[in-house]
Image (cartoon, rainbow, N blue to C red; front, top):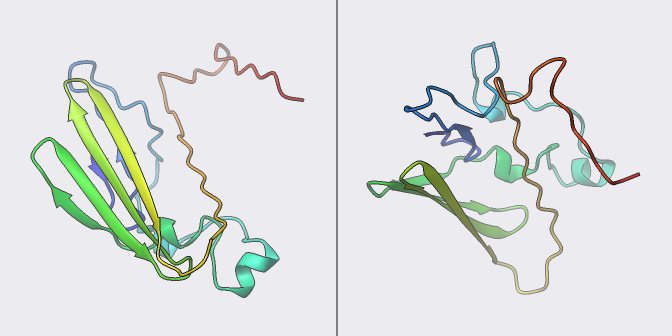
Length: 135
């Protein structure tokens, strides 16, 4: 696995036996997330200094290596939240557990979005179909 310190991103899950990484790998040289953000934040997010994907996607994470597991930790100061992600390898499987702790003295609404971007050979031009029941 490849995990980025900045933003805590999981960049690669390479299966040595199969010889593939199911995640999309960009054809360009990677840069730290704080050097480029894409899209604009909402007007309300921009007023308080947030970026499109929020501060959690840009700040540096503390990474603790525990043999077959990594623990990533970061304090989000604008939120204010403490975020922790544990990534554990179990054979050919990856287990991810996350914990968020509110550091403020009051209730705090948050938006929490995670997404994966799959790469070849999983999506294949002309044969991959995405079906959805939503309208």
